[in-house]
Image: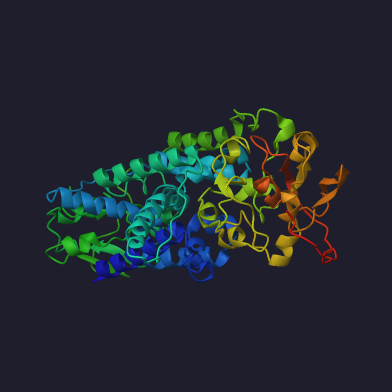
Length: 512
């Protein structure tokens, strides 16, 4: 029964969070379902979400690693891969293996050093090993385009019957680097799960290492009755965490690696395996079957943490565009980040904001922020511009990298400022009126002023510009736009603008 409950909860949580990422039509209300993303352990720690962290800790101390078992999407993804593997090879059995404690705690030590010492240059490492962010990139970069392709196929089919339930959407790859990283993560975690079960959770994952340590002290545990157990090995053969050792007279469990999957309960034919709150007559707990961490291992962990503070920055910040005069040299951090440094301190590159942006303005960075900002969101305006009345990216962010903004705050948040290059503007080069940039400016930071021969040319006021990119998106000049947004290292407060009075003009004849 416990296993069935766990499987049902796991499938529900996995389906909800996956659809949350791939839902391009915004069918799910992020206010209603966003709590799932914000209840993930590492993002909750980054965001200072004490309620979520407290609930996870209490749940672990009571019932073990149920977060890893049912809440973490990467954990459930591994279970799915292992399930398919078992169906492909029905006689497949898992075998006990000693915990890779040196590796798991070294990874955890490096992550802690990066966070505590503010080694922002190495934040991509945290994003790579953090399970929620790793799965988020898989869902946003691999699953979402596949889902959209399926939608387009249905649109083609239904259109033949004059049924327009579905509509065609534009499918594009926002970042080659993000796609490559997502594919590598998908293949690595999938392969490990296919062959060995929950190896990633108990070897690399920092959340798994933290909760595994707490699991040793949990109230409810998988316990084995030494008087009933005959060491048949069925529990070990079905343990996807490879943490049950049946080589002795009675089986023993490495609780730091147990993910509370309850496979062993169903496998045992003698009902010797129980999930109980007290030891009762059961065998003494064997916390770990490997020797305690020796002095040289402690030195290794300390050295790993120290090395993380000493590695120099290997790459300089990437500059986009052949001619810096015509393109931004400072990238644009999304609204709510409060600046590039604010983003670097908290962002684990889960790409939820990228997936949920209705204007397709956000894309994963490559080297725009430098090596420390690889895969973190940055703003580009090839596909659209930042909606003046949209705060979705800051609303959905689970780790505090983008602070929630009200509409009033968003309207006065200057993520960048407008720059105008008159020498390539069509008004100057071709001698005819355009004005597209001014028409698309929501704050009147771009207005048209008299130029020559009765035509007008853009004039910019950076004080009231918020950097939405409407002017850059609509500008017809290519390959470099005549007007663009230069990012602000630190977000500023724009000055409020006043609506100019509009006058109706009488036209005696058609205007063309």
